[in-house]
Image 1 (cartoon, helix red, strand yellow):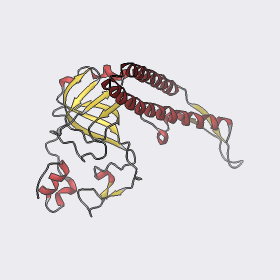
Image 2 (cartoon, rainbow, N blue to C red; image 1 turned 120 degrees about the vertical axis):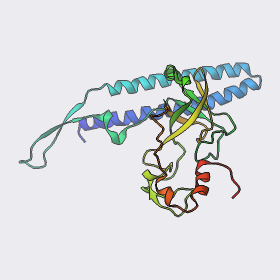
Image 3 (spheres, one colour; image 1 turned 60 degrees about the horizontal axis):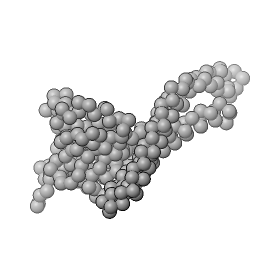
Image 4 (cartoon, rainbow, N blue to C red; image 1 turned 135 degrees about the horizontal axis):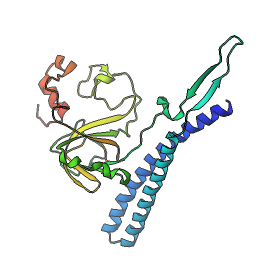
Amino acid sequence: MSTQQKVVSDIRKLKILLSYWVTHNSQHILENETWRAKAESAGLKEVALELEKVIELSREANRHIERAGRLIEKKKPIESVEKPAKANDQITTRKTWPVEDHADYQLKPIGVIRTPYVDNAPYQPVPDDEGDFRICVDDPYDEGLLGLDQFRYIYVIYFIHRVKKKETMSVSPYWTPGTNVGVFASRSPVRPNNLGLSIVQLKRIVRNEVFTSGLDVFDGTPLLDIKPYIRDLDSKTDANYGWLEDLDDHDHLMLHIKGIPHDY
């Protein structure tokens, strides 16, 4: 590997590490917040105060890591010349964009989702589900919530971080055993990129916390984005059920998919 190639490789690795560090720190912040609250409830006010300082320092560290990532993105492309295999081969010059390489592209969390689900979660959002459902947006992004409270529903985009299985292009959905379809024709969480999307009702916003109806994710799920759900733009009245329409007992199946309790 040439010196130039090693530089490109190191930049790619650094970008991946920066994203990982932010995610890792965010998980520690979540754990610290939990224990800070427990310490405060136990009357350990001085301990809680020290943990609050740890949380703020961790958030500050994340801000610097994210700034380092943005500085890398501003880096100009590196010109590289590939050595010809034969004397008659043409010398080709190409631009290498180390931070734009889609194979290594990383998303950064902008907050964390809090739910009552630790070991099990529903397969779809349950609108009237009981429990604490809220989206905690990190400080650098809380100004992005301005005006969101005027919408009734929102899209929540997140990273499905607890998936352990390796993705496959053919899947058998949990609620239709024995039926095989392509992963892109399914709602399977095991995908080439573990991105999740839920539509939930927005109840209220308090500072940097967005309170919602039931979310179908585990507690501590990394938040990637929030977008408003807009009537007419996002509601398609002519949408169908695709291959689900061909299955037997379609009505019964839809109860399972929607997570609606039933006794048959």
